[in-house]
Amino acid sequence: MKTILSTKKLSLSQMELLLNAGVSLVEYNAIKIETVSFEAPLKIENAIFTSQNGIKAFFENGVRSSAVENCFCVGEKTKILLENNGFQVIKMTEYASELADYLVKNHKSEAFHFFCGNIRSDEIPTKLNKNKIPLEEIEVYKTTLNPMKFKRNFDAVLFFSPSGVRSFFTENEDIEMAVCIGKTTASEAKNYTDKVVISNATTVESVIAKAVKTLR
Image 1 (cartoon, one colour):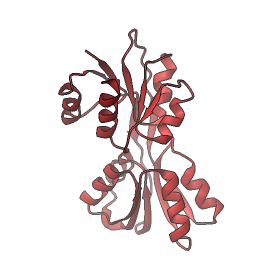
Image 2 (image 1 turned 180 degrees about the horizontal axis):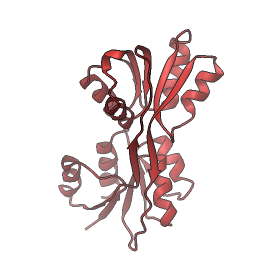
Image 3 (image 1 turned 30 degrees about the vertical axis):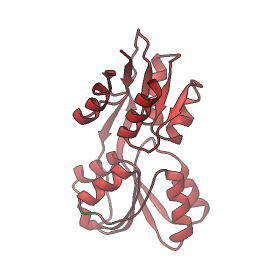
Image 4 (image 1 turned 90 degrees about the horizontal axis):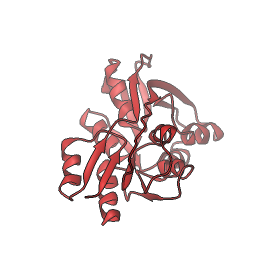
């Protein structure tokens, strides 16, 4: 039986996708997420979220969705979580670079608040600053690496963020295959291995499906 290591603990339905495909699973959280306190304006015209962690931290700090007029986000699951909590999502893209390009092209005269973690990609701040679009970054959560050494080989390792990649390879070396949630995570994985496969969509389910298909 093939065995996969997930660098993120999966939900029951996600685990079943692997088990039903006859694949054994080992899982752990390669990174730890900690909400931090922050101050936000009473009214926010345009908010940017690039992860579900940012949304959860936003609410844990007591800010209401009614404080935000418009949202722009990265990832389908992020969009769903925003809409389920009463936010109006104007635009969703698969990658931060695509969202940055969209904002520059379509909202150049507006200002934005970016709710992010301490480790975030540079695409949005760099692109908006270069085009003189006002952007205030508000750190709402902290990501720390949670390295773990494995004394066995896996047929594939699932990665869901560049931070997760760095955490795994802090204690581990060569692997059979890295299955990554998108181009940004894959780019980080390629710093450690040339055995990299990218999911068709930026969802956990798509990473699982790509792994199962590739291992057959």
